[in-house]
Length: 221
Image 1 (cartoon, helix red, strand yellow):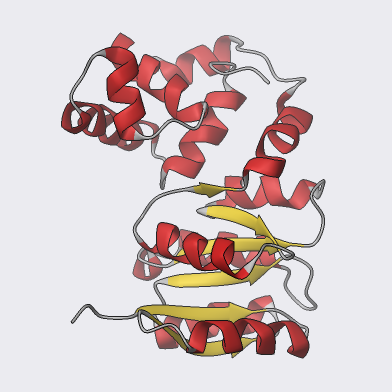
Image 2 (cartoon, helix red, strand yellow):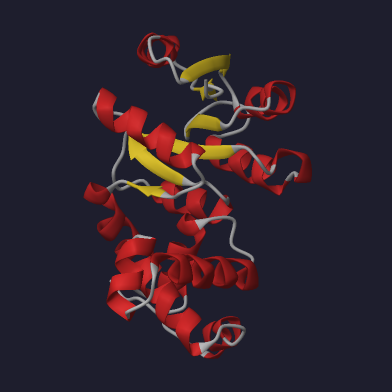
């Protein structure tokens, strides 16, 4: 039997946490290991419970979700913790900042139960989760003024030509199978190129690769 996905709930509203717990507790492959109401509590509980996925609210007292995300992803002993940001606002600039801080993805709080459960499982598996209804608009809003300048070119200089192509396709939201098909590669070879690019760029996961692709102008809104 597979080990359940360990989830930590972080939200300052009790009703929201209760709703999430009710939904998650009935799933055989998911277990809630704790609840936090502030970013400070989130960091402490992440250390004591070592969740696989942390559902992170943005707007909280004492330490907000972005600061908490940055603190958790920067901690070497918490590298295995994946953060899924939940927000009420689909134009919230903090969501993009959360991705930059190391979050593995984001969803709107009004996402349906199936979408939330899918998101938890995807992030737990080490993949990125970017809600389709807001990804393009959000990234476009905060990268429209950024161009592929000398600094961007220097950042991409560590990649081979093929790895640049792969990064561009990751930025467009393609899976490894889709990247392989687009470049006439096997899925395994595509996965290898993605992994090499991720390591060279110092990206935590595919979500950060998407951000880098837009920031450097490799992909344009």
